Amino acid sequence: MGSCVSITVETGPCAPISESNGNENGRGNGNEKRRQRRRRTQLQRQPQPHSSSVHRGCSSSSAAFDYRVDEDSLHRIPGRIFLNGSTRIASLYCKQGRKGQNQDAMLLWENVCSKEDTVFCGVFDGHGPHGHRIAKKVRDSFPLILMAEWDLHLHNNKDGLCSSSAAVEKPNLESHDTNALEAVRESYVKACKLMDKEINMQNNFDCYCSGTTAVTVVKQGQHLVIGNVGDSRAVLCTRDHDDSLVPVQLTTDFKPSLPREAERIKLSKGRVFGLPNEPEVARVWLPNIDSPGLAMSRAFGDFCLKDFGLISLPDVSYHHISDKDEFVVLATDGIWDVLSNREVLGIVGSVPRSCAARIVVDSAVHAWRTKFPAAKIDDCSVVCLFFDSDSDQGKSPSSAEDMMMMMDEQSEVGTVLSATNTIVGPMQPLKSRTNTTSK
Picture 1 (tube, rainbow, N blue to C red):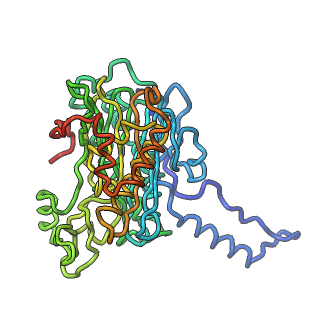
Picture 2 (picture 1 turned 90 degrees about the vertical axis):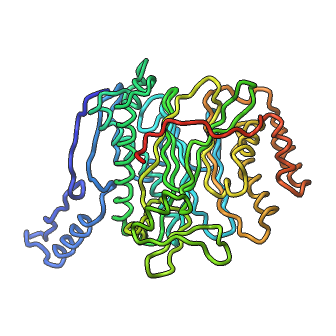
Picture 3 (picture 1 turned 60 degrees about the vertical axis):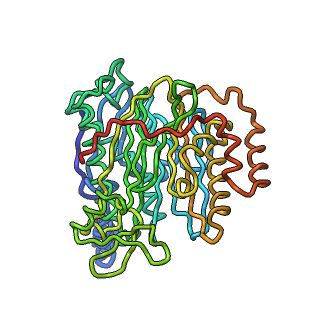
């Protein structure tokens, strides 16, 4: 880990505004000076890119990365994908539902923040009137905040995962070093706190009754760190002793119906109950008003509920990638509400990588139409991250088209998915994972 080379606090605009705009005789124009003072005051009141207003850079084999990057610059970074598409290691796809504006966002970032052999990916599910803006804000800002905090904690901890330089030969997390895991957990927790504060500082959208979930993964070498806020989900595909594909759910869907989540909310004077027309869907309500009825127990934003049990504390876990692990799927709840872990795994494992995410989304849309014909289809987003760069051995590109033709001909998505289930073994209970989040 390289040593920290700069920590600078900035309290105003980058360049001062001149007040020397006078006339030819050197006498300043009073109106012009007043306009300049008003402009300077407005610029100084604008929020900085991060709530902490701190620029951290850490030395590495390359130049230090500037963690304060504007949106246009972010979208031009090579290896950073936030639209539908695919790379040699990933497939991404997002489709708007029937509930209004698309509030999902997604991201794949290879060599994130100039870190070699390090990939960041995530899906973000917004809700509320301004949920689409908050989801995009978290998509753009959270990786930068997380990497800055990760560098700081791991530098202080002297441990190796996600160092600014290339991965060391034997990082301490190979042996599940307690200190290294705790540094990872603390960096995630601190980054989520800073992200929530930054959202609250924005003046271009209202985050009082709007927010977003976020499930994110950082992969470096054979290390996988998963952070989850909300009810999106990450599922790992691995193989058992019979060489059958087996799903391993890496995250918990944080719903208000979970006993631990419901207890925390009630202790904070919040209320948990479902609507009369959908009593099975538990929601979070204010103490004395039947609002806003949030169907998750953790989220960024939604500050109307932050004093009544809603939190943005992430659940953080670690997984060491073995030779039997093949890929991880991150998806918003629009997918998991209608498709099981096993069904999603079967689709991704049986079609070409380049269209895997799209086929999952299309399968979910089909499932919504067949299982819940009267319901409005939710937004659906999927990121598939593959652990090796070998592409589609033994998979015909026509299999994707064949599957879509089958979906058009069949009336039940379960019948369609049976074509992929032949490669998936019997459903197994979730395997244990190393959970580093405090209970």
